[in-house]
Length: 330
Image (cartoon, rainbow, N blue to C red; front, top):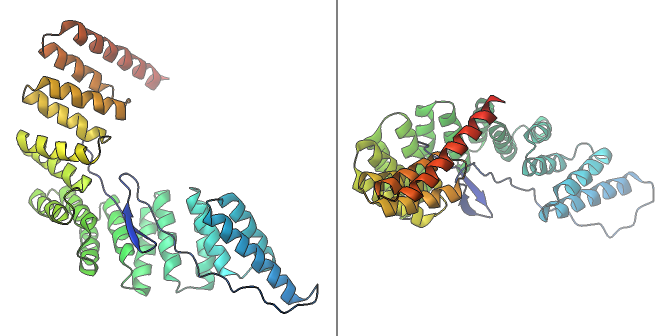
Protein backbone atom coordinates (compact mmCIF):
# COMPACT_ATOMS: atom_id res chain seq x y z
CA UNK A 1 0.00 0.00 0.00
CA UNK A 2 2.97 2.35 0.46
CA UNK A 3 3.00 3.77 -3.05
CA UNK A 4 4.60 6.99 -4.03
CA UNK A 5 3.14 8.21 -7.27
CA UNK A 6 4.97 9.85 -10.15
CA UNK A 7 3.11 11.84 -12.70
CA UNK A 8 4.13 13.06 -16.07
CA UNK A 9 3.44 16.32 -17.84
CA UNK A 10 2.08 16.55 -21.34
CA UNK A 11 1.12 19.47 -23.53
CA UNK A 12 -2.18 19.35 -25.31
CA UNK A 13 -3.31 22.34 -27.33
CA UNK A 14 -0.87 24.47 -25.33
CA UNK A 15 -2.46 23.47 -22.02
CA UNK A 16 -1.27 21.11 -19.32
CA UNK A 17 -2.91 18.06 -17.89
CA UNK A 18 -1.81 15.17 -15.70
CA UNK A 19 -2.66 11.57 -15.06
CA UNK A 20 -2.78 10.23 -11.53
CA UNK A 21 -1.56 6.75 -12.42
CA UNK A 22 -0.05 6.35 -15.78
CA UNK A 23 1.77 8.97 -17.71
CA UNK A 24 -0.31 10.49 -20.59
CA UNK A 25 1.47 11.65 -23.67
CA UNK A 26 0.66 14.27 -26.18
CA UNK A 27 1.53 13.52 -29.77
CA UNK A 28 1.78 16.56 -31.95
CA UNK A 29 0.06 16.33 -35.29
CA UNK A 30 1.58 17.59 -38.50
CA UNK A 31 0.25 20.76 -40.09
CA UNK A 32 -2.81 20.35 -42.25
CA UNK A 33 -2.03 19.13 -45.73
CA UNK A 34 -2.25 21.48 -48.67
CA UNK A 35 -5.73 21.90 -50.03
CA UNK A 36 -6.80 20.25 -53.24
CA UNK A 37 -5.62 21.77 -56.48
CA UNK A 38 -8.29 23.29 -58.66
CA UNK A 39 -6.36 22.27 -61.77
CA UNK A 40 -7.65 19.17 -63.48
CA UNK A 41 -5.16 16.40 -64.28
CA UNK A 42 -5.31 13.47 -66.58
CA UNK A 43 -6.93 10.38 -65.17
CA UNK A 44 -3.82 8.21 -64.88
CA UNK A 45 -1.17 10.91 -64.44
CA UNK A 46 1.34 10.67 -61.55
CA UNK A 47 -0.10 13.90 -60.19
CA UNK A 48 -3.55 12.34 -60.01
CA UNK A 49 -2.17 9.38 -58.04
CA UNK A 50 -0.53 11.74 -55.56
CA UNK A 51 -3.77 13.69 -55.21
CA UNK A 52 -5.58 10.44 -54.42
CA UNK A 53 -2.95 9.51 -51.81
CA UNK A 54 -3.30 12.97 -50.33
CA UNK A 55 -7.09 12.61 -50.11
CA UNK A 56 -6.75 9.29 -48.29
CA UNK A 57 -4.22 10.85 -45.90
CA UNK A 58 -6.61 13.74 -45.17
CA UNK A 59 -9.44 11.28 -44.56
CA UNK A 60 -7.18 9.53 -42.05
CA UNK A 61 -6.59 12.82 -40.26
CA UNK A 62 -10.35 13.43 -40.08
CA UNK A 63 -11.00 9.96 -38.67
CA UNK A 64 -8.28 10.45 -36.05
CA UNK A 65 -9.76 13.80 -35.04
CA UNK A 66 -12.91 11.97 -33.92
CA UNK A 67 -11.05 9.10 -32.26
CA UNK A 68 -11.73 6.61 -35.06
CA UNK A 69 -8.19 5.26 -35.01
CA UNK A 70 -8.85 1.96 -36.82
CA UNK A 71 -10.35 3.83 -39.75
CA UNK A 72 -7.56 6.40 -39.64
CA UNK A 73 -4.88 3.69 -39.75
CA UNK A 74 -6.59 2.05 -42.71
CA UNK A 75 -6.59 5.31 -44.66
CA UNK A 76 -2.98 6.13 -43.79
CA UNK A 77 -1.95 2.69 -45.01
CA UNK A 78 -3.80 3.13 -48.28
CA UNK A 79 -2.11 6.49 -48.75
CA UNK A 80 1.31 4.96 -48.10
CA UNK A 81 0.78 2.27 -50.73
CA UNK A 82 0.61 5.07 -53.32
CA UNK A 83 3.09 7.45 -51.67
CA UNK A 84 5.48 5.37 -49.48
CA UNK A 85 7.69 8.35 -48.61
CA UNK A 86 5.00 10.40 -46.89
CA UNK A 87 6.62 10.91 -43.48
CA UNK A 88 3.51 12.71 -42.20
CA UNK A 89 1.49 9.55 -42.80
CA UNK A 90 4.01 7.42 -40.90
CA UNK A 91 4.05 9.91 -38.07
CA UNK A 92 0.28 10.00 -37.77
CA UNK A 93 -0.13 6.25 -38.09
CA UNK A 94 2.32 5.98 -35.18
CA UNK A 95 0.20 8.41 -33.18
CA UNK A 96 -2.93 6.40 -33.96
CA UNK A 97 -1.27 3.16 -32.86
CA UNK A 98 -0.17 4.86 -29.64
CA UNK A 99 -3.72 5.99 -28.95
CA UNK A 100 -4.87 2.39 -29.45
CA UNK A 101 -2.29 1.12 -26.93
CA UNK A 102 -0.16 -0.63 -29.57
CA UNK A 103 3.36 0.68 -28.81
CA UNK A 104 5.23 -1.88 -30.95
CA UNK A 105 3.36 -0.76 -34.07
CA UNK A 106 3.84 2.87 -33.09
CA UNK A 107 7.58 2.36 -32.64
CA UNK A 108 7.86 0.77 -36.08
CA UNK A 109 6.11 3.75 -37.67
CA UNK A 110 8.13 6.37 -35.80
CA UNK A 111 11.40 4.68 -36.75
CA UNK A 112 10.40 4.97 -40.40
CA UNK A 113 9.93 8.70 -39.91
CA UNK A 114 13.37 9.02 -38.31
CA UNK A 115 14.95 7.10 -41.20
CA UNK A 116 13.67 9.80 -43.51
CA UNK A 117 13.89 12.80 -41.15
CA UNK A 118 16.69 12.12 -38.62
CA UNK A 119 16.32 15.55 -36.98
CA UNK A 120 12.57 15.34 -36.32
CA UNK A 121 12.54 16.06 -32.58
CA UNK A 122 8.76 15.57 -32.28
CA UNK A 123 9.08 12.04 -33.60
CA UNK A 124 11.94 11.27 -31.21
CA UNK A 125 9.68 12.44 -28.39
CA UNK A 126 6.79 10.32 -29.65
CA UNK A 127 9.14 7.36 -30.04
CA UNK A 128 10.30 7.83 -26.46
CA UNK A 129 6.69 7.96 -25.28
CA UNK A 130 5.94 4.70 -27.14
CA UNK A 131 8.96 3.01 -25.58
CA UNK A 132 7.82 4.38 -22.21
CA UNK A 133 4.34 2.90 -22.67
CA UNK A 134 5.95 -0.42 -23.50
CA UNK A 135 8.05 -0.29 -20.32
CA UNK A 136 11.29 -0.08 -22.32
CA UNK A 137 12.55 2.80 -20.18
CA UNK A 138 16.19 2.71 -21.26
CA UNK A 139 15.20 3.11 -24.90
CA UNK A 140 12.75 5.81 -23.88
CA UNK A 141 15.59 7.64 -22.13
CA UNK A 142 17.70 7.48 -25.29
CA UNK A 143 14.86 8.94 -27.35
CA UNK A 144 14.07 11.74 -24.91
CA UNK A 145 17.77 12.65 -24.74
CA UNK A 146 17.86 12.77 -28.54
CA UNK A 147 14.81 15.04 -28.49
CA UNK A 148 16.58 17.42 -26.12
CA UNK A 149 19.81 17.24 -28.10
CA UNK A 150 18.00 18.45 -31.22
CA UNK A 151 15.69 20.89 -29.40
CA UNK A 152 17.08 21.83 -25.95
CA UNK A 153 13.96 23.82 -24.98
CA UNK A 154 11.59 20.86 -25.51
CA UNK A 155 10.01 21.11 -22.05
CA UNK A 156 7.89 17.98 -21.78
CA UNK A 157 10.86 15.85 -22.88
CA UNK A 158 12.62 16.78 -19.63
CA UNK A 159 9.56 15.71 -17.63
CA UNK A 160 9.31 12.36 -19.40
CA UNK A 161 13.07 11.88 -19.14
CA UNK A 162 12.86 12.46 -15.39
CA UNK A 163 10.09 9.89 -14.93
CA UNK A 164 11.84 7.32 -17.13
CA UNK A 165 15.15 7.76 -15.29
CA UNK A 166 13.39 7.40 -11.95
CA UNK A 167 11.74 4.18 -13.12
CA UNK A 168 15.15 2.56 -13.70
CA UNK A 169 16.74 3.92 -10.53
CA UNK A 170 18.76 6.67 -12.21
CA UNK A 171 17.76 9.14 -9.52
CA UNK A 172 20.51 11.70 -9.99
CA UNK A 173 19.71 11.92 -13.72
CA UNK A 174 16.02 12.22 -12.88
CA UNK A 175 16.74 15.06 -10.46
CA UNK A 176 18.73 16.92 -13.10
CA UNK A 177 15.96 16.46 -15.66
CA UNK A 178 13.27 17.79 -13.33
CA UNK A 179 15.48 20.71 -12.28
CA UNK A 180 15.93 21.62 -15.92
CA UNK A 181 12.16 21.43 -16.38
CA UNK A 182 11.75 23.81 -13.45
CA UNK A 183 14.34 26.14 -14.94
CA UNK A 184 12.32 26.30 -18.16
CA UNK A 185 8.97 26.64 -16.38
CA UNK A 186 9.13 27.45 -12.64
CA UNK A 187 5.35 27.50 -12.14
CA UNK A 188 4.46 23.84 -12.62
CA UNK A 189 3.41 22.21 -9.36
CA UNK A 190 3.67 18.73 -10.83
CA UNK A 191 7.40 19.08 -11.52
CA UNK A 192 8.19 20.02 -7.92
CA UNK A 193 6.06 17.10 -6.76
CA UNK A 194 7.89 14.68 -9.07
CA UNK A 195 11.25 16.04 -7.95
CA UNK A 196 10.16 15.47 -4.35
CA UNK A 197 9.26 11.87 -5.17
CA UNK A 198 12.74 11.22 -6.53
CA UNK A 199 14.26 12.68 -3.37
CA UNK A 200 11.96 10.39 -1.37
CA UNK A 201 13.18 7.40 -3.35
CA UNK A 202 16.74 8.41 -2.52
CA UNK A 203 15.83 8.60 1.17
CA UNK A 204 16.25 12.39 1.26
CA UNK A 205 13.00 13.12 3.10
CA UNK A 206 13.90 16.69 4.10
CA UNK A 207 14.60 17.66 0.49
CA UNK A 208 11.46 15.80 -0.64
CA UNK A 209 9.26 17.68 1.83
CA UNK A 210 10.64 21.01 0.64
CA UNK A 211 9.70 20.18 -2.96
CA UNK A 212 6.21 18.96 -2.04
CA UNK A 213 5.58 22.23 -0.21
CA UNK A 214 6.76 24.21 -3.24
CA UNK A 215 4.19 22.30 -5.26
CA UNK A 216 1.48 23.25 -2.76
CA UNK A 217 2.56 26.90 -2.85
CA UNK A 218 1.66 26.84 -6.55
CA UNK A 219 -1.36 24.55 -6.26
CA UNK A 220 -2.75 24.04 -2.73
CA UNK A 221 -4.92 21.19 -4.02
CA UNK A 222 -2.16 19.21 -5.72
CA UNK A 223 -3.26 15.68 -4.81
CA UNK A 224 0.07 13.89 -5.02
CA UNK A 225 1.95 16.52 -3.04
CA UNK A 226 -0.68 16.34 -0.29
CA UNK A 227 -0.62 12.55 -0.29
CA UNK A 228 3.17 12.31 -0.22
CA UNK A 229 3.47 14.79 2.65
CA UNK A 230 0.96 12.59 4.51
CA UNK A 231 3.19 9.57 3.83
CA UNK A 232 6.20 11.39 5.25
CA UNK A 233 4.16 12.35 8.34
CA UNK A 234 3.13 8.73 8.72
CA UNK A 235 6.76 7.68 8.45
CA UNK A 236 7.82 10.01 11.26
CA UNK A 237 4.87 9.05 13.47
CA UNK A 238 3.21 12.46 13.32
CA UNK A 239 -0.37 11.16 13.45
CA UNK A 240 -2.15 14.51 13.59
CA UNK A 241 -0.28 15.88 10.59
CA UNK A 242 -0.80 12.63 8.69
CA UNK A 243 -4.56 12.87 9.31
CA UNK A 244 -4.52 16.51 8.20
CA UNK A 245 -2.84 15.77 4.88
CA UNK A 246 -4.70 12.53 4.16
CA UNK A 247 -7.95 14.42 4.84
CA UNK A 248 -6.93 17.17 2.43
CA UNK A 249 -6.03 14.52 -0.14
CA UNK A 250 -9.45 12.87 -0.04
CA UNK A 251 -11.14 16.26 -0.14
CA UNK A 252 -9.45 16.72 -3.49
CA UNK A 253 -10.19 13.15 -4.62
CA UNK A 254 -12.61 11.09 -2.55
CA UNK A 255 -11.76 8.03 -4.68
CA UNK A 256 -8.10 7.95 -3.59
CA UNK A 257 -8.43 4.57 -1.85
CA UNK A 258 -4.85 4.55 -0.52
CA UNK A 259 -5.34 7.90 1.21
CA UNK A 260 -8.74 6.83 2.57
CA UNK A 261 -7.29 3.57 3.90
CA UNK A 262 -4.32 5.25 5.56
CA UNK A 263 -6.59 7.93 6.97
CA UNK A 264 -8.64 5.17 8.60
CA UNK A 265 -5.52 3.53 10.04
CA UNK A 266 -4.49 6.82 11.65
CA UNK A 267 -7.98 7.39 13.05
CA UNK A 268 -7.67 3.97 14.69
CA UNK A 269 -4.48 5.14 16.40
CA UNK A 270 -6.43 8.13 17.75
CA UNK A 271 -9.32 5.82 18.79
CA UNK A 272 -11.66 7.77 16.51
CA UNK A 273 -13.45 4.62 15.44
CA UNK A 274 -16.45 6.14 13.68
CA UNK A 275 -14.17 8.27 11.53
CA UNK A 276 -12.01 5.22 10.84
CA UNK A 277 -14.99 3.09 9.78
CA UNK A 278 -16.21 5.84 7.46
CA UNK A 279 -12.77 6.14 5.85
CA UNK A 280 -12.40 2.36 5.49
CA UNK A 281 -15.84 1.97 3.92
CA UNK A 282 -15.11 4.71 1.41
CA UNK A 283 -11.75 3.07 0.63
CA UNK A 284 -13.27 -0.35 -0.03
CA UNK A 285 -15.84 1.16 -2.40
CA UNK A 286 -12.97 2.59 -4.44
CA UNK A 287 -10.81 -0.53 -4.17
CA UNK A 288 -12.79 -3.70 -3.41
CA UNK A 289 -9.68 -5.81 -4.05
CA UNK A 290 -8.09 -4.63 -0.79
CA UNK A 291 -9.65 -7.28 1.41
CA UNK A 292 -7.56 -6.19 4.42
CA UNK A 293 -10.02 -3.32 4.80
CA UNK A 294 -12.75 -5.75 5.91
CA UNK A 295 -10.51 -6.88 8.75
CA UNK A 296 -9.85 -3.27 9.74
CA UNK A 297 -13.54 -2.40 9.71
CA UNK A 298 -14.29 -5.47 11.83
CA UNK A 299 -11.62 -4.53 14.36
CA UNK A 300 -12.93 -0.96 14.50
CA UNK A 301 -16.45 -2.21 15.28
CA UNK A 302 -14.97 -4.61 17.82
CA UNK A 303 -13.18 -1.72 19.55
CA UNK A 304 -16.54 0.10 19.70
CA UNK A 305 -18.10 -2.91 21.42
CA UNK A 306 -20.36 -3.67 18.44
CA UNK A 307 -19.79 -7.43 18.33
CA UNK A 308 -22.45 -8.30 15.75
CA UNK A 309 -21.16 -5.77 13.17
CA UNK A 310 -17.58 -6.78 13.94
CA UNK A 311 -18.30 -10.47 13.36
CA UNK A 312 -19.97 -9.72 10.03
CA UNK A 313 -16.94 -7.92 8.63
CA UNK A 314 -14.43 -10.35 10.16
CA UNK A 315 -16.30 -13.29 8.63
CA UNK A 316 -16.34 -11.52 5.29
CA UNK A 317 -12.60 -10.96 5.63
CA UNK A 318 -12.01 -14.68 6.27
CA UNK A 319 -14.12 -15.69 3.28
CA UNK A 320 -12.41 -13.22 0.96
CA UNK A 321 -8.97 -14.26 2.21
CA UNK A 322 -9.74 -17.94 1.65
CA UNK A 323 -11.09 -17.21 -1.83
CA UNK A 324 -8.02 -15.15 -2.73
CA UNK A 325 -5.71 -17.90 -1.46
CA UNK A 326 -7.44 -20.56 -3.58
CA UNK A 327 -7.32 -18.33 -6.65
CA UNK A 328 -3.60 -17.77 -6.13
CA UNK A 329 -2.95 -21.51 -5.86
CA UNK A 330 -4.76 -22.29 -9.11
